[in-house]
Length: 94
Image 1 (cartoon, rainbow, N blue to C red):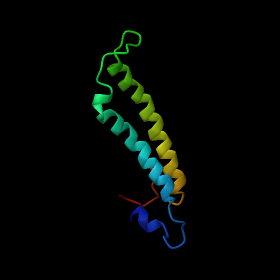
Image 2: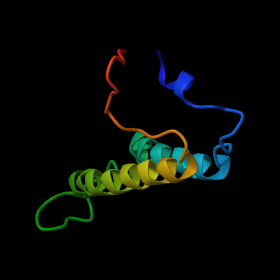
Image 3: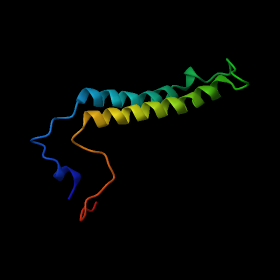
């Protein structure tokens, strides 16, 4: 039995596609920012002895975490009828 069979698609509201799109953008931003290497592959300015290249990437560790969490919360809000939990009912196997 899959999770899809537990949801009656005729009675549940559709997912909010706008929120899902925003979540997708939030997940894509860090990838695009770090793939555009020429925007940060330089030494100056130096911050506390670290070149720009290093602290720019380190800043994205925190930004990416915040954006991923925000995207997760948006998906939960956009799809309230599809819980994302790891709990299983008795007799339910994957």
